[in-house]
Amino acid sequence: MLRLAVTVASLLLGAVAAQPVAAEKRYGPGVSDSEIKIGQTMPYSGAASAYGTIGKAEAAYFAMINDAGGINGRKIRFLTVDDGYSPPKTVEQVRKLVEQDQVLLLFQTMGTATNNAIRKYVNEKKVPHLFLASGASLWADPEHFPWTIGWQPDLQTEGAIVARDILDHKADGEIAVLYQNDDYGKDYMKGFRAALGARAPKMIVAAASYESTDPTVDSQIVILQASGADTFFNVSSPKFAAQAIRRAYDIGWKPTHFLTSGSSSVAAVLQPAGLEKSNGIVSAAYIKD
Image 1 (tube, helix red, strand yellow):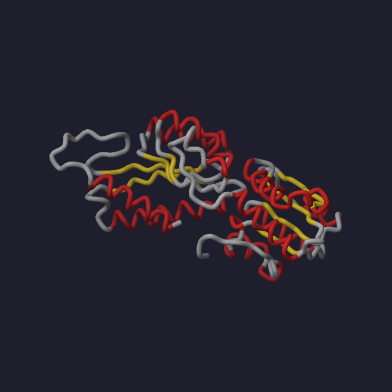
Image 2 (spheres, rainbow, N blue to C red):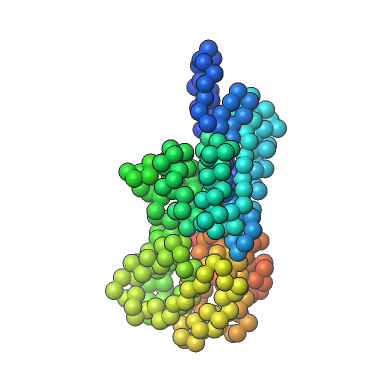
């Protein structure tokens, strides 16, 4: 994530440096002679609050840039606000950032359903919606949403990678899946099922969903264990991923356990679940932990 903040800082440096010295001092929203305003929504509260670490790290990086003199004398004012991972709250906060705070751009807004809730609005307003903290395939649509730019590998691709690994190493396996019942979970499932192809109906013997507002996924794990599956694809955000790991261990269910990259953090997921209970989990990463 810090590497991403470096990229944004570099882009801003180039844009500001391109301003003619003698030019009239008229700038767009969020830019003055002394500051550049960047907006962000992040779940600092609620079920996905583990992701709040991303916003805190980026705020620290921008503060470091400011301490070093800013960008051509302009300080970055980073307005990172809590949306609780709730789409209606995201809409409310983004409208405030755009219409009241008048930010230059939105950077790394977190979540699939949350970003989908604001995508049409920010494109109509022509506010740069950059490097979303979501891997949904939705963001690759420059024809209809040219102001929205994704960043991380898309979820369907990751789901397909897991499916191909299962086909390569456990082609006769029986799979149970836990997924979040929104765009995030469904995108993973779409890629996963597509990669399994005609074998998907036979191999996926159980699937259970949960809502991001649910207190636990304990009952779902018990149901999935009862299916007799020997392979488990855990498509959960950090809080529920940790619960699933812990519950599976506690009831003696020991399938080959695949965990999504967004919930593979040692500090946010594996330690809360219990490192001894996380032993043997298979995951993927596109950044260094």
